[in-house]
Length: 131
Image (cartoon, rainbow, N blue to C red; front, side):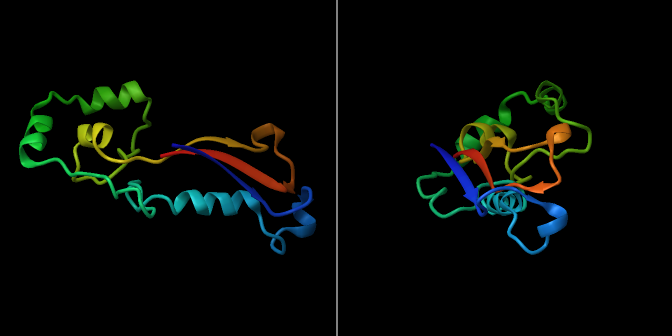
Protein backbone atom coordinates (compact mmCIF):
# COMPACT_ATOMS: atom_id res chain seq x y z
CA UNK A 1 0.00 0.00 0.00
CA UNK A 2 1.21 3.50 -0.80
CA UNK A 3 0.42 6.55 1.29
CA UNK A 4 1.27 10.18 0.66
CA UNK A 5 1.98 12.02 3.90
CA UNK A 6 2.02 15.81 3.99
CA UNK A 7 3.00 17.77 7.08
CA UNK A 8 1.86 21.37 6.91
CA UNK A 9 2.58 23.67 9.86
CA UNK A 10 2.84 27.17 8.41
CA UNK A 11 1.06 29.41 5.88
CA UNK A 12 4.36 29.91 4.07
CA UNK A 13 8.11 29.46 4.52
CA UNK A 14 9.86 31.52 7.20
CA UNK A 15 13.48 32.63 7.39
CA UNK A 16 15.19 30.26 9.81
CA UNK A 17 17.18 33.10 11.38
CA UNK A 18 13.97 34.89 12.28
CA UNK A 19 11.80 31.98 13.44
CA UNK A 20 14.01 28.89 13.91
CA UNK A 21 13.59 27.32 17.31
CA UNK A 22 10.20 28.95 17.89
CA UNK A 23 8.04 27.57 15.09
CA UNK A 24 7.49 23.89 14.26
CA UNK A 25 9.60 22.53 11.42
CA UNK A 26 7.56 20.28 9.09
CA UNK A 27 10.73 18.61 7.77
CA UNK A 28 11.80 17.53 11.26
CA UNK A 29 8.25 16.48 12.14
CA UNK A 30 8.09 14.29 9.04
CA UNK A 31 11.54 12.82 9.79
CA UNK A 32 10.35 11.91 13.29
CA UNK A 33 7.19 10.31 11.88
CA UNK A 34 9.16 8.26 9.37
CA UNK A 35 11.65 7.15 12.03
CA UNK A 36 8.78 5.99 14.24
CA UNK A 37 7.64 3.50 11.57
CA UNK A 38 10.63 1.23 12.17
CA UNK A 39 12.52 -0.26 15.12
CA UNK A 40 16.24 0.09 15.83
CA UNK A 41 17.05 -2.47 13.10
CA UNK A 42 14.82 -0.94 10.42
CA UNK A 43 12.02 -3.51 10.71
CA UNK A 44 8.44 -2.20 10.58
CA UNK A 45 7.20 -1.24 14.03
CA UNK A 46 3.77 0.32 13.50
CA UNK A 47 0.41 -1.05 14.61
CA UNK A 48 -1.01 -3.71 12.32
CA UNK A 49 2.05 -4.28 10.15
CA UNK A 50 2.66 -7.78 11.52
CA UNK A 51 -1.00 -8.82 11.94
CA UNK A 52 -1.10 -11.11 8.89
CA UNK A 53 2.52 -12.23 9.05
CA UNK A 54 3.10 -15.96 9.37
CA UNK A 55 6.65 -16.79 10.42
CA UNK A 56 8.34 -19.43 8.30
CA UNK A 57 8.57 -22.84 9.89
CA UNK A 58 11.87 -24.66 10.42
CA UNK A 59 11.64 -26.45 7.04
CA UNK A 60 11.12 -23.19 5.15
CA UNK A 61 13.96 -21.51 7.03
CA UNK A 62 16.18 -24.50 6.17
CA UNK A 63 15.31 -24.08 2.47
CA UNK A 64 16.21 -20.39 2.67
CA UNK A 65 19.46 -21.18 4.47
CA UNK A 66 20.37 -23.66 1.71
CA UNK A 67 20.21 -20.98 -0.99
CA UNK A 68 23.57 -19.67 -2.18
CA UNK A 69 24.22 -16.24 -0.70
CA UNK A 70 26.84 -13.82 -1.93
CA UNK A 71 26.27 -10.95 0.50
CA UNK A 72 29.24 -8.99 -0.83
CA UNK A 73 27.85 -9.37 -4.37
CA UNK A 74 24.41 -8.20 -3.25
CA UNK A 75 25.93 -5.23 -1.46
CA UNK A 76 27.82 -4.29 -4.64
CA UNK A 77 24.72 -4.75 -6.80
CA UNK A 78 22.66 -2.61 -4.43
CA UNK A 79 25.37 0.06 -4.26
CA UNK A 80 25.71 -0.18 -0.49
CA UNK A 81 28.51 1.89 0.94
CA UNK A 82 31.21 0.28 3.10
CA UNK A 83 30.21 0.19 6.74
CA UNK A 84 26.46 0.40 6.04
CA UNK A 85 24.63 -2.49 7.69
CA UNK A 86 22.00 -4.63 6.01
CA UNK A 87 18.64 -3.41 7.33
CA UNK A 88 16.40 -5.49 9.55
CA UNK A 89 16.92 -7.89 12.41
CA UNK A 90 20.50 -9.20 12.08
CA UNK A 91 19.31 -12.67 13.17
CA UNK A 92 16.98 -12.95 10.14
CA UNK A 93 18.31 -14.08 6.75
CA UNK A 94 18.45 -11.69 3.83
CA UNK A 95 16.11 -13.96 1.85
CA UNK A 96 13.53 -13.97 4.63
CA UNK A 97 13.76 -10.17 4.81
CA UNK A 98 13.35 -9.84 1.04
CA UNK A 99 10.61 -12.38 0.44
CA UNK A 100 8.65 -13.11 3.61
CA UNK A 101 8.61 -10.21 6.06
CA UNK A 102 6.73 -6.91 5.98
CA UNK A 103 8.68 -3.83 4.95
CA UNK A 104 8.21 -0.08 5.00
CA UNK A 105 10.04 2.33 2.70
CA UNK A 106 9.94 6.07 2.16
CA UNK A 107 10.04 6.07 -1.63
CA UNK A 108 10.02 9.79 -2.22
CA UNK A 109 10.49 13.02 -0.33
CA UNK A 110 9.73 16.43 -1.80
CA UNK A 111 11.33 19.61 -0.55
CA UNK A 112 14.14 22.06 -1.15
CA UNK A 113 17.53 20.40 -0.98
CA UNK A 114 21.17 20.90 -1.82
CA UNK A 115 22.05 24.01 -3.80
CA UNK A 116 18.32 24.90 -4.03
CA UNK A 117 17.91 24.90 -0.25
CA UNK A 118 16.86 28.15 1.30
CA UNK A 119 17.66 29.47 4.77
CA UNK A 120 14.02 28.92 5.53
CA UNK A 121 11.72 26.68 7.48
CA UNK A 122 9.51 25.12 4.83
CA UNK A 123 5.77 25.52 5.31
CA UNK A 124 5.08 21.92 4.33
CA UNK A 125 6.83 18.71 3.38
CA UNK A 126 5.56 15.55 1.69
CA UNK A 127 6.69 11.96 1.31
CA UNK A 128 5.31 8.75 -0.15
CA UNK A 129 5.51 5.74 2.13
CA UNK A 130 5.18 2.16 0.87
CA UNK A 131 4.34 -0.67 3.23
